[in-house]
Amino acid sequence: MTSIGEPITRVDGIAKVTGAAKYSAEFEVPDLAYGVLVTSTIPSGRVTGMNVAAARRAPGVIEILTSANAPKLPQGGKAAVKPPAGRVLSLLQDNLVHYNNQPIAVVVAESLEQAIYAGTLLEPRYQTDAAKLDFLAGFAAAHPSGHGKDPSDVPQGRSRRARPKRM
Image (cartoon, rainbow, N blue to C red; front, top):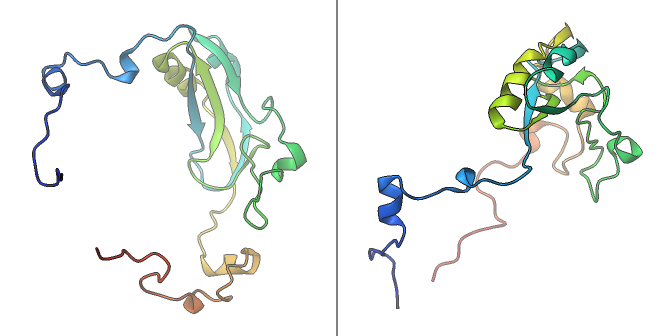
């Protein structure tokens, strides 16, 4: 039996196209909290302050996590199981900004809308550093890939590892 190319009957089709179907986000879950990431708006530097007090006073806010109060990771973020060479998980561990849109806070509230609104009240302040945009300059500190030290040494083209098999 094959169904490839054949139409199938969707038992929920009519409910979905008429708006009668409930999606997972529409089910009420008691005591559910919503978390929203607040991300950096600079590519490099440090967070020098946030208006955490104003955000905490916003309706429905349960907690705001920043580098000042987030739990510290074991072994300074190096405790992951088999992490890539030299990789350190630095999420909310310090006030340094390494890239644009890096998470710098998490707002937890009773509703998604309340969490989003409180996040806008944080208004982070920064000390900016020059953006690190020179791709080749980073190779001195890069982790070994096993291919070589220069990007031109990396083989180009289709990978030989995973080729589809013909049936």
